[in-house]
Length: 69
Image (cartoon, rainbow, N blue to C red):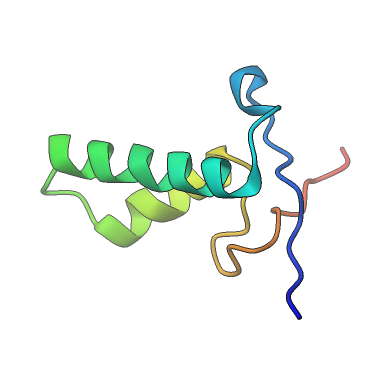
């Protein structure tokens, strides 16, 4: 048995994609950004892209908790 959140991405172009498409897109964005800036820290690039996509960067099956304020 597995459990995961449906994507809850704040970006309008990512609201109707599947879980797999959503996570893959965030990972692809990180890969491209790192390829363009190889001097950057890959971990920080991944965390940044996952957070931008509304993903918990420490548990990719779940969405990031949003500040209600």
